[in-house]
Length: 142
Image 1 (tube, rainbow, N blue to C red):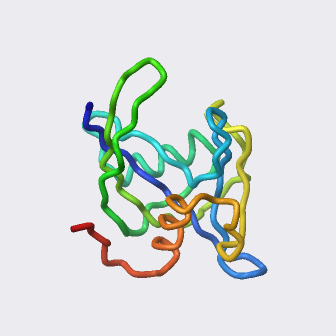
Image 2 (tube, rainbow, N blue to C red):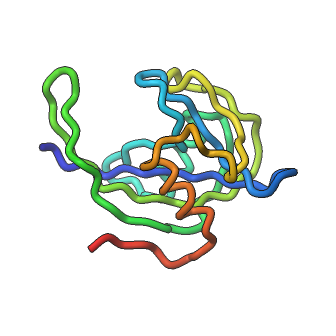
């Protein structure tokens, strides 16, 4: 498998009902997720997280903390390509912008209270909960 580095940008802001997170609905599989993406060659991971949020959801955010580093399960794509990702989860602070699907990778982009993630799958919910937990010490898998 091709070994790739990726980011998950969990963008948080204060909401009426507590903290809210930015979610997108992926156009390829319909999953609700935080913004995710591949780090470009030579790109700093925190910059990649901020870039992906702007590209995919038209929201400006600042990476505030690296909160989780973990290897994802191998993936086989429809064309037979195999990849495995090292995922770096960043807690990001919302700065500005109204979410919208900005680049065609997503069909929706919106804010959702962190307390209402029942329709977000367990893997993505764990990333959001870890980021929203507030610790600035990264979680590492062993």
